Image 1: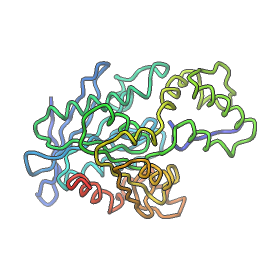
Image 2: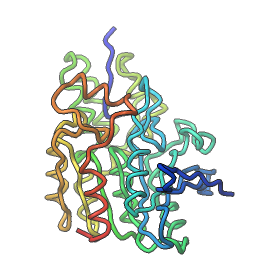
Image 3: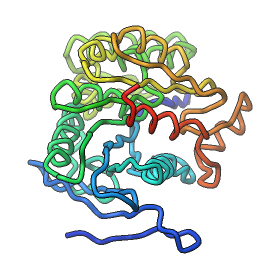
Image 4: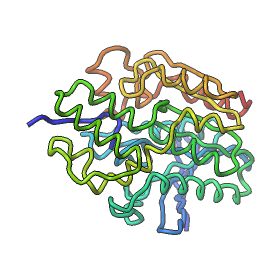
Length: 319
């Protein structure tokens, strides 16, 4: 049997971090009371000051938690956890959270048949509104990683924010990405997938699915795919009127560098920053494929040095 794997798819307690008796940041549990259940996250604050810029961090596709770790991988990479701490150390407050159905927010999830891409979008809208009500924050924005880039991008058209940042975000609609990832499969698989993708893109579910494609196009996930396919990142980013930063790595094997170039050209107010040798989980790996994949499960490998510095400069200066 042919196995197909898609890379892209699928009340406050305080904790203070100290190093040499010098407090660098403070962490608080934060909870979003959404209309359909509680969504749990972590608010990380700079140790100094009383009013800060704040960014909402959105994780990538599939069962990826607030720290950037996926339950389908053999280990953790802690990419968003590291980014959160680095931003706070440099004066940027931030919230990272478990998406509905994931981690601490698993009880707020819908059944697979009822989940839609728009649920993730409106969760971001509600998070931003919650942060707007917090007087500690003077500037509010979104940082979306991978699939979180599109989620945050669409949400940014529905709620008032001050900046938007895409990390390793795709420029193509999800149906085109799936089609591209399956193109080297046997002809039977490619033709079957293309027929299903065409139907889903038109808004229709498909009853009969080849068993070899069932994990991707099972009936219970088709409504979610239809809702996801409806958004074209290039068309969405054109609608953003706030400062936009697009960050892409040259060693990203999931979302190639060209995606950042396409997004930045589509936006009238975007800055593109390309980090040499950075992979999809925001770490330096170079062209060594084995090292690149190993980084997905290596919590000891630090983030690219330029990443947090670039984000902080952009947030503070707006460029």
